[in-house]
Image (tube, rainbow, N blue to C red; front, top):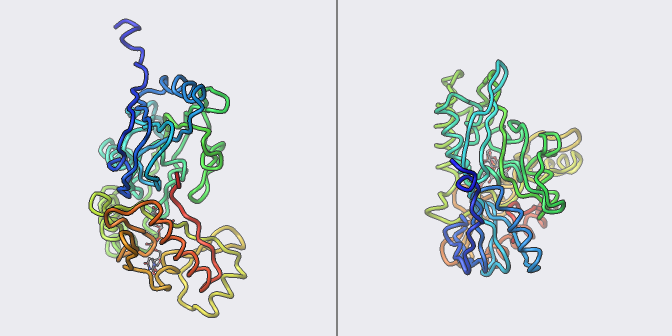
Length: 345
Ligand code: EPU
C-alpha cells in the first residue's frame, strides 16, 4: 500500500444537518455545519478552519448526555473514530485501545466475548467510548475511571495531540479533568487497563437482589442482570426520549444529612468522602410527588423519578422548565440544590 492510500481524507462537512436521530432526548435540533470525524488526523485542520471563521463549536458523541437547542450555530463535530484492539497483555492486565466513536455498550459486549471481564456492571449505558470518560460514567459500584490507563486527545488550546495518564484525568463522581475544562479536549482514543484478577461486584442493592441465590456469578451473568435491571428501570431512548439520570446525586455535609434524617427517617443515602453523604436524588424527587407527572410534551419517568423524558415534540426549553420546577420544589422541601447532569448546549 502506498502512503497516499493510507492518509485519511479531510473530514466530511455537512451543512444543515438534522440531529433528531443523534440525541437520545429526540429533540428536533439542527446543526448549521457538521463535520464527520473518522480519524484523529482530521481534527487539527477542522479546528483551524473553525478558528479562522471564528465559529462557535462543540463535539457530539452518541448524544446521550446532551440537551440540544433547536439550532446549533457554527460547527458541530460528530465523533465517528472506530477501532478496538488489544495492544498488550501480561500476567496482571490487558491493555485495550478503543476509538472514541465506538458504541459503549457494544464495547462492553465485545470485551466479554474476548474474555476481558471487568466492564460488565456498565452494560447498556448509552453513548460512545470517547464521551464516557468526560462524565466518568458509572453504575452498580463501578466507574469507567477505574479501568482507564490513558486517554489520547486533541488539545485545542495548545493545538496538539496529548496523552493523559489516568492520574491526570482527575476522575471523580460524574466528573473529570475534561469536564472541568470544557471546550478544550477532543478525546480520540481511550486505552483501558483490564486487570486479570477479575472479581464479581454485586454489592449494589439492585444487583445483590438478583444474585441472592448465586453468590458466585460469572461476568456474563452480571452483564445480563445489569441489562435486565436497566431495561426495567430506565426508558429505552428509541422508544421514549431521555438522557438517563437528569440530576446528579447531591453530596451534602454530614450535619445537613443528620438534620434531614430527623424529619425524613426513610431518606435514602450512601456514604461518601469523610464528613459527607450522597443522597439519592431520585428519592428526593419522588417524595415531591413528581414521578410519572407530565408537563406538556415532557415529564418524569414513571419507574424512576431521576429520569426526565420527552414524550414527543418536546424542546430543550420544555425540559429545562420542568427541571426548574423540580429543583425549586426539592430545594423548598429539603434545602438541597440539584445539579443537572447532561450538558446544556
Ligand atoms: N428512588 C426512589 N424513587 C425513585 C428513584 C429512586 O425512591 O423514583 C430511591 C430508591 O430507594 C433507590 C435509590 O433512590 O434505591 C437510588 O436509586 P437507583 O438505585 O435507581 O440509583 P440512582 O441513584 O437513581 C445511580 C446513577 C445511575 C446508575 C445507578 C445504578 C447517578 C446520578 N445515577 O442512579 O446512572 O445507573 O445509580 O448504579 O449517579 C446515569 O448517570 O445516567 C445513570 C443512569
